[in-house]
Length: 281
Ligand code: SPD
Image 1 (tube, rainbow, N blue to C red):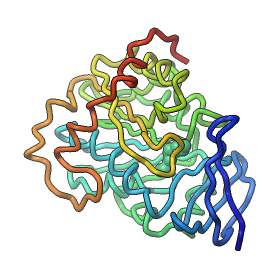
Image 2: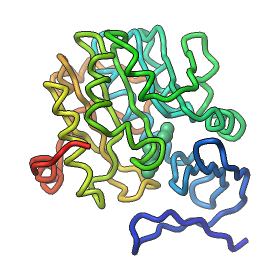
Image 3: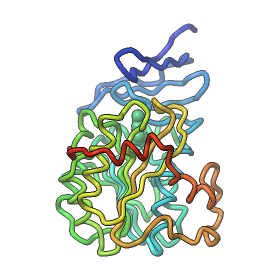
Image 4: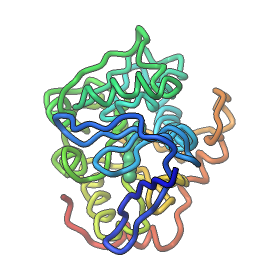
């Protein structure tokens, strides 16, 4: 079969994948949802034209967005995951035995339904007595909470459509309020390669609400730019002060104690981006 899917990275740059089969294609109330079986990456969830998850490389993103904050907090009992209806971040979060409750806030029930049907290895954690799913807007959910969570993980899609507000200064201020006095949060903050205009603005928004702010990177082959950033905002605990010798092996495939430190070492063009003056969204 000679069918190709492409994701538009920039006006003059498209990333193409050969498709074996289209497994699902629908318009939900919020977005266009497609599930593909791709030659090189296997089953793949695509929302509004952007690859979200593939069975081949999802472990990189999900391990890095979950374990860095969860090993930074000494006792993460109550965790909130915003977005991430595929369940990958929840699956990783559940590997931490001290986590008593995981609240997943996903705006689109169709994403969770597709994950259950087509991605059982990713969504496996969604049926678990520690997990509570809320089908609502993450922005509204967070605005109504105060000192409620130890760790908040913002596993959003790109800053377009329903996810735009998840990158704004007002949202980050509400995240800070929803955290306990020693809480911390992490957000996926896009690739520094090709997002030179928005990264400094996102970073400035987080810095306005948190005394400790650190960006770290991972390589995610199916996200445009490959080099992917996460930004951690913390009220008390510094991810660089973690005693990495005490990190147990929970069966990781990407994350390691050494990588916990190394991921925060930024290439010069990235740290320069973060130093540039910017107005938050
Ligand atoms: N460019 C796509 C970025 C998507 C990040 N979130 C993906 C959700 C996977 N749980």
